[in-house]
Length: 416
Image 1 (cartoon, helix red, strand yellow):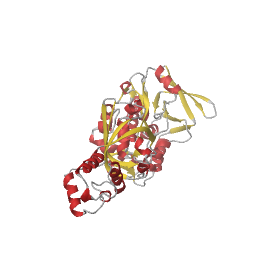
Image 2: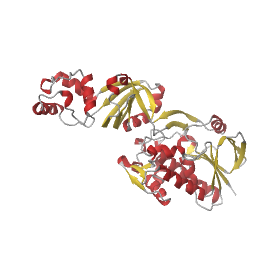
Image 3: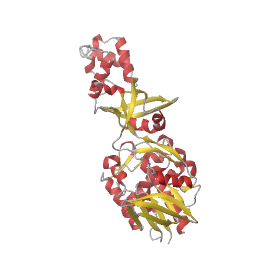
Image 4: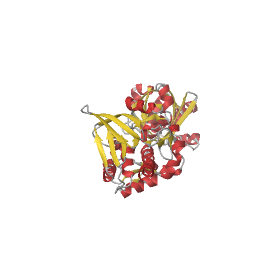
């Protein structure tokens, strides 16, 4: 019997075991340093598991994968969102589509996705080794020696014909060094998908806005002579801003922002879809509500409390009526609406997303097989590679895709 060692019982590792054909005679062992499988998956999507996104199948990965888009383009054509939905359907997990193409299990339970994968992997003969941290992978002839340590301090040494590495974004130094000894190299890790702390939040008037959501905003930042921008829903928080638009910006700017220690200028457009004649909108307000305070006639779909805040920082007095609203004050307010200047002074973890960029360099991987170009029968998939996507199901899809392609090649080379 030939053995396959899978390092990591996360999304990619368990999916690989679940995707292998049944009754192949292949011995599959999944090593997991913690005492449970798929812990990260269970937390995704607020515990609902946004497991893919239909936009994946548009074949424009550069819009969704800040790093690794070119490497993952063809793999996604082989196993994309539709394929993932069908795969889980066959495992008994029905799905539903929500806004922006996000796909969830119809039950809204991440545990249903996890249970289906674990059951499929077990049916395929996979054995889970929990509390087993792999620290070294070495080559001995045509086989690999997998060495590690259990939670009780016991050292284990196993032999495998192929190894699949799916350790996520946090490499243990010993394992990383063993792969470097085999000729591999890595891109430095950096956080991705995080909220932003703003110096503006030092004012109580901003903190009072905490919890307010802007349906659509555009964020722009120039860092290291490169412009980063994103558009989408924006959440105002006591420390700054969060929400989809911020997570997308942080994903594309992850390395540049880290290099600046998360301190840089930021511009916010609170009404990017504003197409109406602004002067005409104010003229109508003057005609319809001349005695109303400017603070009490929010426009352009801006939430009332945010509108009042923008009026305040524009120097508009609470007693200023729309009839007495000068053209100079109007220009100042409009500028605050479409080009609100602030400063990022740090980052904050996002409770539902915890992704890192960086990992094994992609030029060392054959993306048609997910096999190392340097060492035969050594495979990689998931966040351990320098591939990461924006929020919305793209990171899990990358894990499924890489694991599926690796499983197909493992079957081809070890079984048939």
